[in-house]
Image (cartoon, rainbow, N blue to C red; front, side, top):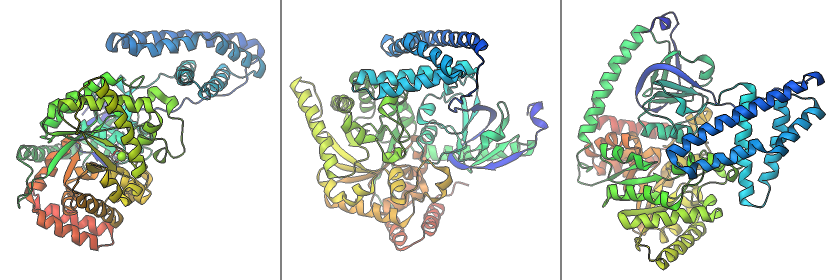
Length: 589
Ligand code: PEP
Ligand code: MG
């Protein structure tokens, strides 16, 4: 242990265990607060200095953007770099600069305040213009204004890709795009003040095998950059300045966990067949084509959920049809003849697209808002480019397509009508695609579950998104740590809903998969299979533990478990029943 860590007292705090693993290292404090603007009066004789300060900040911002421009051009190409040309133009806008100086002269306020007032007026005016190109300028002004303000205030813009050493990232919260830009070889672990097990940043951390503990309230106030920390992603313990004894104890725990994980991994090369002979398809959830080797490492049978929005999250503009086609095709080819289920864009909610902020205005209830299929049916060009890319990729493997957040049969029909248009366009151009492409719907909104009989008529399969389905059924925000304990996958309402969806699907002879986080928790595997679910799809590192249980249980017993669970009223009792089922079959001590 480093000498400076020895004189600090050990402090243990408890959070929500969100991604398994143990890590020990120094803190990288990632505080991404909105720029806080001071407001004060500037005496008339000091105003020329205030203007000079403004000019220096503009110049410095210009140099920063030029560096980024050059880097992006080198790494990603001239097209990607073009957005920064627009940013440079904002900095040269004489109207914006002149108005800021006039604001200083008339109000006498400090230059940060004046610049922000003027920039906000511009942003508002541009976002209301009925022209897409001009509306996009609002996003440019917002980005540039943020940079100028940070430079005026002397704050460095923080980004997780600045993480150059192996550190434990401690943050108030982390967005999915932050996690996507994270270099997993440098992030030893993640600890956040807020968040929950099903927030998308956590889902990404899990697939990167980065241990995470979330919902550790006010933890960012307790630590400083460079503090030594031990993170236990199994139990949710976070230990600041751990003692020698603690480190020794965790060293032993880590060895034991590693050996258990190795045993699960060895067993995962075997087929997923229950003791009474039923094969269960266990597929992988992925966010990017780069995860193909990870799926192979954990023996996923193809992909049950490709969250395509991650191609968009950190991009300066929506990826082109060709860029998407390349990614989808790579995944389809990698797993053929196994299926790859490509989900159309699920942007919005906790996944706004940074590079197209103007398309996602701030909403009071983003999870009930402009999201997923609603966004796609409104933004036809973006939707159609993606559908064409998926169709073209379908010529290279076993591609299935599914829509997220379908609320009912009419919405499904509208989405299918756009798909039909895309098929006609491609056919007219002689472009190859799978004419029998299977199309499914995610069931993650209660209205879809309640009309599963109607949806089943127009679908080739269902995939149940339990993350959202539970959030909407129980009215529990899936990313709010204050109510995370009320997010109960074993609530009787959830079980009844799952049973109902399966019954309607099977009546129409279509299969049902579960691709929410519930599918990757071996404690729930028997319950889901017992309720009649046909396939499970999960973050690749979770596959071995689920497969281990599948191979150690009988489907007949799982059905009995589900019947018993359906008779119970208490989520806790149902949970205990599932834990017992798992514990009596899996002993890895
Ligand atoms: C779900 O809601 O369960 C799901 C798989 O979709 P996402 O987590 O991407 O919202
Ligand atoms: Mg969902």
